View 1 (cartoon, one colour):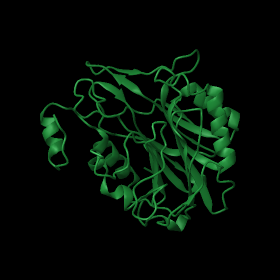
View 2 (cartoon, one colour):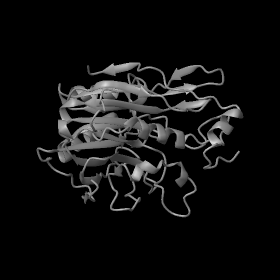
View 3 (cartoon, helix red, strand yellow):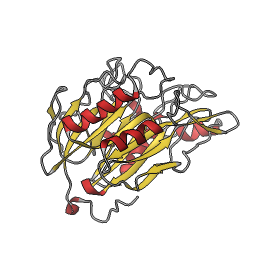
Length: 318
């Protein structure tokens, strides 16, 4: 059945038998502007000013059995992480398709100040049984998505989202980064036709709405990740309707200039599907070339918020 934009469609869809499912509790926790950004092509943003902080999102394509066999070794991917940190002074990373053992190893090699939180993907069968996805290769651990920061991560939470009834469950992971004055939310949105029982169902609108709802009215939040969706532009984009209105209005995307909703490609196929949004002033945006994944890391530099800049009455402990 075709999914439409009408507001009543979610209830209609559920009457036809779809049940909402949510991610489980964290199974592994290790740690505890509007102005147009400058365009820098691949050379690195260099050191941030004292009042700035750089945040990156990157789908590492570390799960080799997911067509990632030719995108570099764990060592290659670590070198890319290290270069991101060194060349663009990245202090917070949103990572997707990372293996748990590779993540912990990378954090240890980067230094004791680096901390991570990890949430595994789950493969759900017709009986509702959840099974973690194991990364191929000895000692690689589980496949999942993660946050990494050069400081403590606090108030970690998995945001409940609609997920396929049968198929791969991804999700949204949020945490505060007190040392940077930020709250960050990392999302890995479902692909179209990701429900094996109901391939006609599209979950992306609900998941994107959940992502921006998680940001709430706290103007110190950065949200993004691999959203598996092109920008909401162009007459030939049949999925533009999935985007919540606040994505490019209340919040601004890393590569957004003025009212434009385009952006540089982040995937090897020439599309943009990786994003960073914030209401903080953006000072730079960079899509980094890499041979260690089929995704390009996206780096956004923002003006570091002060304690007095938080929206009154809004708690960052979520």
